[in-house]
Figure (tube, rainbow, N blue to C red):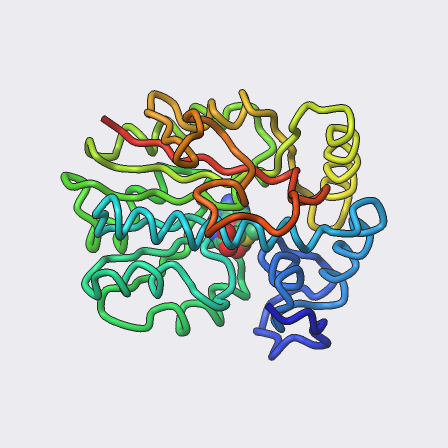
Length: 283
Ligand code: SAM
């Protein structure tokens, strides 16, 4: 993980407004990518004034994505992935992780960011089993009816539906209903993965979560809600929650503590304490 800051986007697709921050580009900047603009880095800079480790939150989210994909492909035997809010291609994208287990695993990425659509489509659609569709992930009906989704995913068989680093950008209170539409469309044996900005409801972290939310929502990016454990769990309606570790009770957990790669060398820092993940199974 390089800590070298990016200086300029690799190119500016026609029609992209460089005066507006975008979720995909701010996240790209946090991961030290190159497809971001000054306005995106400014959002990070401002949040960094109250949470200096804000980039670690993005890395926690990304590592969780990688580990849950590996778990679902390898341990749970899932061969179809619907990745909602794919983001800009970076190291170790979903299809690379899961197709290492089985090269014929089908992956459909969904995003609506113009830069992701311009750059991402070509880079992500690397082989015959990897596809990209432009749609609004907060309109499940649109995603589920999309021709690319219907053509490449078999809804009679288990699917892993990923909402990693996405639902905190949905500001409405009807997230559970939105997610229920997705869950209802999935076959038994399917999984739902959610990573979400987290208000741990502890005196030392709730204040930080509240300040970060204030900055994200009022920034040119315009969204970023920190939800509590109960609010995040409600985004997996009717699902059996998987334990996030060998001796852990099934629950929402900090992203970095969900099946960690080994013992941690240090406790989660402030920002890493404000991003949580959860995996649910439809029985
Ligand atoms: N899932 C990836 C990960 O965890 O590494 C990327 C997460 S990134 C923080 C969130 C992505 O969701 C961005 O690429 C953004 O464009 C996309 N996104 C946000 N709202 C969306 C919407 N309404 N429809 C489609 N994509 C959306």
